[in-house]
Image 1 (tube, rainbow, N blue to C red):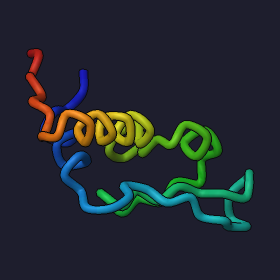
Image 2 (cartoon, one colour; image 1 turned 60 degrees about the vertical axis):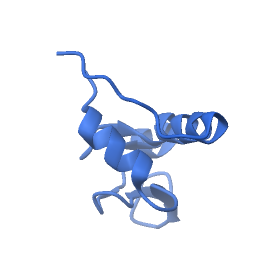
Image 3 (spheres, rainbow, N blue to C red; image 1 turned 30 degrees about the vertical axis):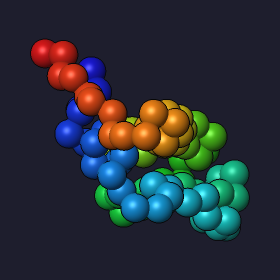
Image 4 (tube, helix red, strand yellow; image 1 turned 180 degrees about the vertical axis):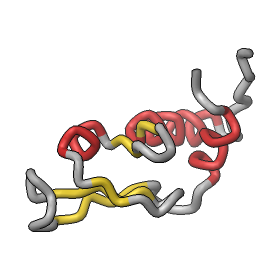
Length: 82
């Protein structure tokens, strides 16, 4: 189940929510830095899937939801499903 409060925080975050960093420290030469929580992951799977292991958030999903928000011209209403 997705944390709607956290997803809202991602959607409201100004600018990009992540950055791919070139680094020798990472196995594949790249790391992903989450601009929401500040974590940098050197895990190749996190980089490949644009995923933050700390927030448990898929940055590609956030990007798609942001595009949808822009298309409808208003913030999305995120309903909780408990």
